[in-house]
Length: 367
Image (cartoon, rainbow, N blue to C red):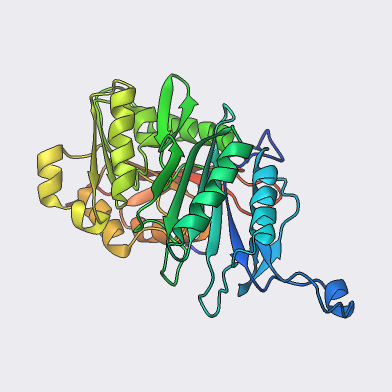
């Protein structure tokens, strides 16, 4: 905050540690590659028939190389068993692993999600629509893993792996998972963002609620609301809450989540936040007393920061998975706001990453 944001740091509270050190993630994405990363020992072995196909994580700084994962400690079972089954099935049936440079092959990505109740969602991403191969593979996955309550797939012929603009098809089961937090239930679809460390997410949301200091009369805006988790977590403590998010499917989930939880004082809007957050929107939905913002790693667009400054809520609760871009945005907000408190939360044990909740309070009331 001092070095990048050039603002006084305020009170920095001790980092809230993660109770789970392993098997804490509720989502992982693995990549298929026909030219996996080889260790020095493998390269020096001079074996002519060494298996080059792999399923795992990208090597840092080398987009075209994938480290084949044999056991991952980040996600609870049956994550490892599913990944190994899929890889062995693909090898046994000679299915083409993706070539990241030439953009050829069939198998692209494997996404595994789970909830605290042990239910599992699996999404397999294919480069082309080979219906027979796809259905045979998915059917074998379903038969061997009854814990999978949502089995889905997507045909992605694009150059990138993102699914936000793709049609995810349901093969078997439900099209979502449900996660519980306090008395709330959250619907999670394949494209939905949900904090990947669920137990720590509860600490994070509790901190946001504490920093907001709601009395029950406030109008609250929740920017980058995702599936509405923070908004719905706060709804009972304020007069009304407005969630804004650019992913349409996430907003659909947020609306459904509000219905499921019988919450009637929350409204959700999909679109580019730079365009949504304007004078007419505020006139129609009420002036925010508090703005909560939880942007992606890149932080907030400068136009969004400008709109927040012009709107001038009494408090801003800024949640960030990247304190560097958070500090950059806080520097821009410092023309009217003072950073008073920060609460880091360890969402990713054994990494340098930390989620940070920052409380900013209005000090310049000029228009």
